[in-house]
Structure formats: C-alpha cells, structure tokens
Image 1 (spheres, one colour):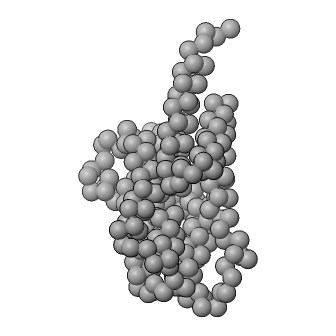
Image 2 (image 1 turned 90 degrees about the vertical axis):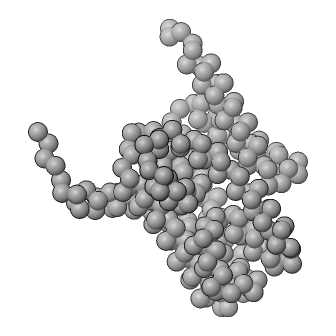
Length: 240
C-alpha cells in the first residue's frame, strides 16, 4: 500500500513542480514586461495605471498594442476594440482546455481563465494530455507567470527614465524565442511538425496580405482544421 503524504507536503511539491515547469515562461515574461513598463512610462502612463494593466488586463500583446495606441493619441474606443480582437484567440485556447476542466468548480474555472495566457496554455495542454490534473501545480504555473509579469513591469517603470533606446536590448525577440521553445516541446510526431510549419506559413502569408490582427486567429483555425484532416487520414490507414 502506498503511503499517503500529508496535504501540506503534496501542496509544496505541487508548487515546486509548477514553478519548475513555468521557469522558461517566467524568464520570457519578465523581459517582455520590462519592455512594456519602459514603453508605458515613456508614453506618459502613470506607474499605478501601468501596474494595474499588468494585474487586471494581463495580456502581453494587448498591453503593448494599447500603449502604442495611447502614445499615438488613439481614442478609447479604438484601444478597446483593437485589444478585444487581439484577445479573441483566447476563445480557442479555453475551448481546447474545457474538456479537461469539467469537474472544476466555477470559482476555480474563473481564476484559471483569468490567468490563462498563450504560454501557460501550452504548458497546461501538455500536462492535461499526459493525465496530470493537479490543481496546485496548475495554479502554481499561472500565479508564478503573472507574478513575473507584474514584477517585470515594475522594474521597467523603475528604470524607464534611464533607457533611451529599448531596441538595442533586443527585448522584442524574447517573446518569439519563448514561443519557438514552447512549440518545439509540443512536436511529438510528423503531423505536429507539418501543422506547425503550415500554420506558421499561413500566419506569415496572411500578415503580408494585410489581414492585420485577425492573422493569428484565422491561421490557427485553418491549421487546426488541416491537422484534424491529416490526423484522421493517417490514423485511418490500415496497418501494414
């Protein structure tokens, strides 16, 4: 008979495991949030409002776009509409994870959804597919990721006045680099490789064609649809 660990020991292990899994995301988030804090400070947004965006909005691309629009003098309606379209992809993310969360309480679902991002989605989809549903581990990933984002924002605000050229730090590459690393972790077979490459090509083509903020959503839907067709085709083949 396997001995049962005390509840606090299990929780501690869950938090440590979650932090370990989230480490690549934490490093990426800190650098991107640092850039966001600097840009927001230079755009004239107060420190309180900047930190509030990272706590309440917590959406990297949407926050960066909002700062750019604010600096350009865009109206509040333009900012709201643009960030709404950018974040529509979260409908796809939540729909993909929903089947694994049927037994969760509504308050747990609300907290989970509030902190779900593109990067934590990748971690959770991998864990859930492997049968790992520990809630402590799940929330450890989410909480630590947002904490790194908020702390990075604060650091960017603190040193923003001393940074004259943010581009020379290449902080804008941190997010794509993190996505590439997370994508590689997801490639398990030839279908994944084909779909990943095809979706990337579609996103690039649609972006060059001027589709704008709808690029990611359309490319994701098309890529996923093609993936389903390939998966069903190859799995239905009789074994030789």
